Length: 233
Ligand code: URA
Image (cartoon, rainbow, N blue to C red; front, side):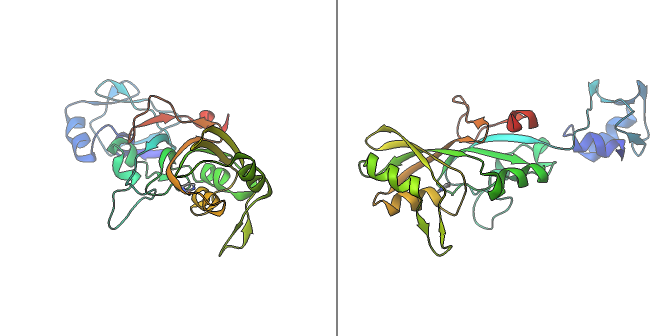
């Protein structure tokens, strides 16, 4: 890709365009090992080697972030009233204009993928792909394992969409905790499934999404950068 060198360095999160302009005059920008004081110089990211204060500036088009979403933030890029997951990112990541892949409710915690890769987003959220998502569920009342299992296996009618949920699998942890794996992502789906069997979800945490697992040491609100290969597996 051909791009102005100051824009490349700014887009890769090193500094703002105005900082880069000043620094370039002092010799902070090298193109192919030579000082480049013309911050408007067009470089070709496939050919030219750029560095900023000695650090190589590698061009990347896409970014992939795995967040442990906390409660109280919205899985969206903008919200009029509430903080969004994008508000929790550093500027070096927001510069890529990322967005969340699918949605978690405001009060749901756990694994949320954030990217600017539209094709990957489509592949992971397309109903045809049936990407599995596993939730750790805390319930208000005791689990009736056999009853729930047969209902979730058969599917539940969701209204007003008028659809039958695809077979879901439940793994019981104890009387009031289980893992539920679903292969679709309808609005409030897990909460509505447990409501249908006469129970109530009081805590919901997503622990798996396709090949991704929530790292046990990732605190709420924290995130890590991952690669496309981690996601596709
Ligand atoms: N199902 C729900 O009910 N809520 C979520 O956030 C995700 C799945």
